Length: 328
Image (cartoon, rainbow, N blue to C red; front, side, top):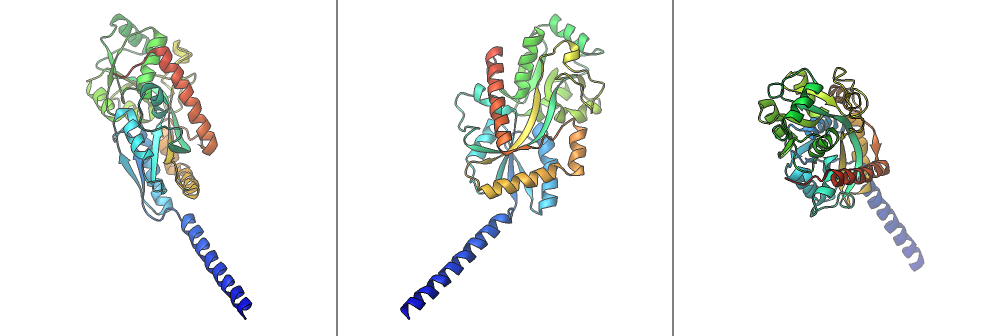
């Protein structure tokens, strides 16, 4: 009698435990069950925003839960990264970083986070070439050759705006100066959006910007594109020459954007977030936005994205050392 009771008791316990486990697994598989916050570490209007917001709109439509953009600009994108790294790792805080965050370790000796250990790389969502854009009133002329002649004739008198010290905008400018044997004064801002606004207003002369945030203003004639980086022209702007054909074959700077989660985020939530973002970026609506901004979706995720990030950190460390770039 006692033995039968023990067996029945054990069976009830096992069934109850299985039910709990099943409920837990079901709860995980239904992520997201509430709105998700994505920290964007730059002010609204910059290149990161230009991809984050269309992606968020499609994520919200497909998943049925809002993806809320939380702009936290400052310190070249490192302020927002630090906030994301310290967020509760419950799957409901994501971080959309950029190439800037692989430059930062070489430029900021006392970061309060480690991009390699405190954040988990989920997926690379967009890649666009860097573009040299100028205010046409500040720098008149037909094209790149006239621009280069003006820069060389006025060392230090012309300036370029950036999203902040240590960002790709800054390093792209330093690399250009190094390879073109010119000197242009760097003016750092708290994000690409404010810098771009001042370029349009004529407060700065030029920017080395990601094509994504400049595209609309180039098409509207508010700024002029003189060069895209790399060895091929961009399909969205076929009339803009590439660096290689202008005599700068080694000038190859790409602005890319990716999504991370805080370390400790449940593996299931990581996987679901990656898949939901992949679906959002693969929609016809998102594809149209990406194409309009000259961007590509590489569809690189997980370990491959992690390896890519590590490679970028090594590459930019070499650029920083060779250029002698310092924070202003």
